[in-house]
Image (cartoon, rainbow, N blue to C red):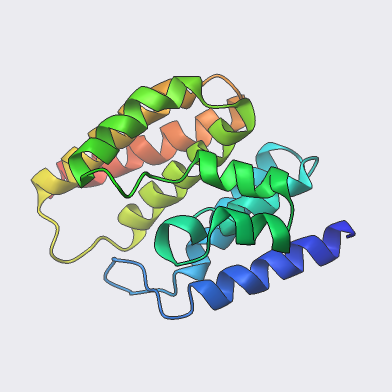
Length: 181
């Protein structure tokens, strides 16, 4: 499959999988906007050199948020993409608190490619909170979210300087915004 076809098929599949999903923020933007932003960050960080990683970025929440399995994803796309998505997918057998802890402890051991994907996801999530925070989130919840994201990012950092800068700048702006609330 050529690169353009792979990306457009991954984008369409992600859009179909997330068709009824919305972001938590005040604007309730379509969830697919998030996966496209993550894919864009991955593409910029890798200068477009890793097409499977960009496709995995488009698909990164499919296993976590839908009934699609890793096997189905591998059959539809390829094993490399399915493995990347699996590597960044939370274990739904764990409680939310255990998932958060696992994100922090597993971050340093992820593959370099998964670290780029996860750092892009964290950056996009912070941007979302910055631009359209959930109305029902208190300042304390935003601080907790920011601190957890920073702890995960510590274990992901060092793979891509540009992406590390994107994350750090977004985290700094989010902290400044929270501090003024």
